[in-house]
Image (cartoon, rainbow, N blue to C red; front, side):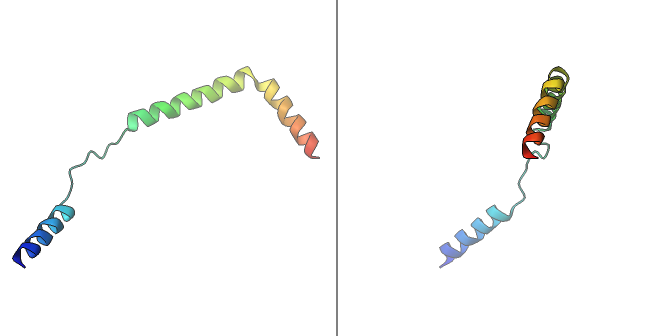
Length: 64
């Protein structure tokens, strides 16, 4: 019975002990992805603005 009690105590202590973790995550990677996405959207908007407006106008006219 002591073995089971000791095993349960060790398991509890192992699971409840605070873990050392790096809380920063991959922030620089996510910032880079966000900035690159915003840049791509900006470039596509500048290059294809008239075509995008024509597509939107055509789609909205078909709905009416």
